[in-house]
Length: 369
Image (cartoon, rainbow, N blue to C red):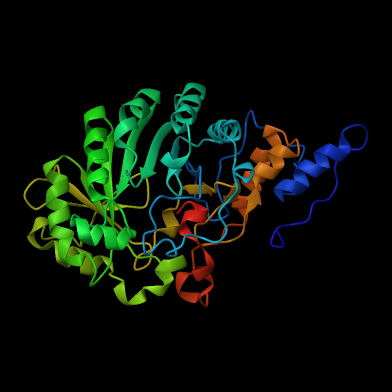
């Protein structure tokens, strides 16, 4: 972790070595005496942005290999099981974040439902902090059998990746995915009472002729559809010719959105901006403009990878390891301080356009995109 500050100081006497080892493992400097976890400062960065949303990856593996996300044979650096954060460590981390003011946790991956007994993690976190909203991002291939269990465990919503309604095209984009299983997962989630949104990566010349059909299909089921600009990360960085900005996406939706769709819009709790339907103001369609109109100024999210690396920005490879800190004996107070310290060094924006290609080495599934 060459990008992290060195660790200096530490208490003298019995246990001093263990405490210093824990701080060194996280990468953060010594916890200052004034830092009080019972009355912590706001979780904010130097730009004044407040953080209330944790994206928690529970695995970097996936049963699909979407062409904008993962190489055909999978990533070359998947974590071994002992390298992943345990469920107990995940639950402990969420409890610490809740004390720092985080009120929303999104489980990500890879595909979270690959992780065995995932429902038990949802239940444990819900039981420990009922004030925290728990949601999931999934490809839904394994969702149908467990949707009701997840709802009963405390999950309130799910965002499902759906890049095509054509079975053959879906197989091509996902490199073998079964559209039927995904649609069954969506229907089961609706039946279970989960709030469902669908995420479609907008790709010119690949799926842009389906945008209208996807919106109509979603609205007919009471689902909010959302379109995401193709981000220049990992495999997506090799698909620049397929990029579509928000104006192109909205143009493809035609008369489905209001005439003033490019005017003032409604923002949600995350990065999406929502436009109203032209025919029914209760229906919305979202866009996530990570590139053409980035939302860095209003960022409210912190990410933790399956390996336990805390990343303050999806596009940054700078991280501290909460997993290593836990396993070296760090206290909750030390981990909370390390989190506050890491956010203090967050850049103003993601710098997708000026990184010289460095983002091609950022695997989306490895960082919990």
